[in-house]
Length: 319
Image 1 (cartoon, rainbow, N blue to C red):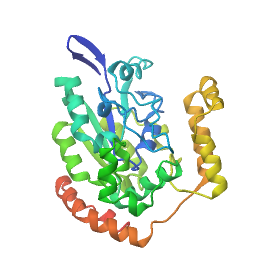
Image 2: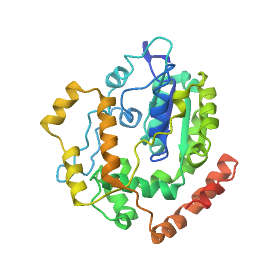
Image 3: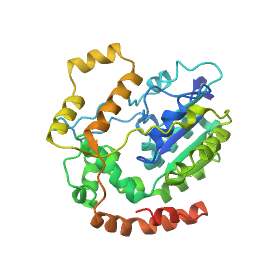
Image 4: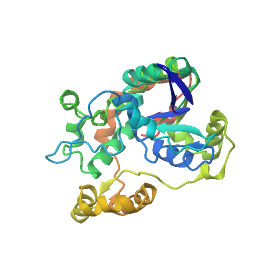
C-alpha cells in the first residue's frame, strides 16, 4: 500500500497479523508467505509499530539482560527496507504479536503513519484459548532459556509488574497476553477491516478457514496455504544434554555469524526448527495451573463472547 505521509510516499503493509502470541500466527505467516501474490519480510516479528522511536526493551538472557535486535526495528527507514524486495503487484504483509497486547501504542503509530489510508488496512487476528496459550508461551520461553522462574512465580502479578517496570519486554506478561477483550475492542474500533479467527476452530478445518483468509485478502486460493507442517511448537527441553545443545544453538558465536553470511534465513530457520523438535517434548499443564488460569480467564472469556457476539464454548471444554 502506498501511503502519503508528510509529503513522502511510503510503501507500507496492506495487512497485518497482530497476534495473539502462541496462537498459530507463525504457522499463518509461514503459509501466507509462500503465496505468490503476497510478500512478507524474511523474518516475522519486526515489532516496529510497538518500538517506533522507542529504545529496545530487555530480555532475560543469563547475565547479559539484552534482547537480540537483529530483526526487530524501531526506525522507519529500517522498517521500509523490509519490503524493498517486493515484486510489483504483490500485497505486503507483516506479523508481530506485540501489537495485539500493546494495542494503544501500536494503533497510535499505525494511525500516525497511515492517516486516512488506515481504513483500508486489513487486520487478521488469531486467538487461542488463553489458558493453554499462557502455558505454551511459558514453555517456549523456558526452552529458549530465557525464563529462569517457575510458572507460578512467572505469572504472579508482583513478578509481571516488576519485570515491566524494569523494561523487560512485553512477552514476560504471560497473563496479559491472554486478556483479549480490551485488545480486540481496540483493534475492531480502530480498523473497520478487522477479522478474528479462533485457533482451535481454524486448524480443525484448515481448508475452510484458509479460504476465508484468501477471500478476505482478495487473493486466489492456492495449495501452498494448506500445508499441515507444524511450525514453532513449544515444549520442555528433554534433559541436560538437550539443554547443553540448546545453549550452544542459542548463544552468539563466530560460526553462527559465518552461517548467517552464507545461508539464507529460510534455510537456517528450517534447520533450527528440525533440531528444536528433537530437543523438546510436549509437557501437559498441571491441573493446579489449569484451575488457577481458569479462574483468571473465565470472566475474560465472558467479555470476549459478548464483544464477538458468539459462543466460545470450544475453549471452555478444551482446557
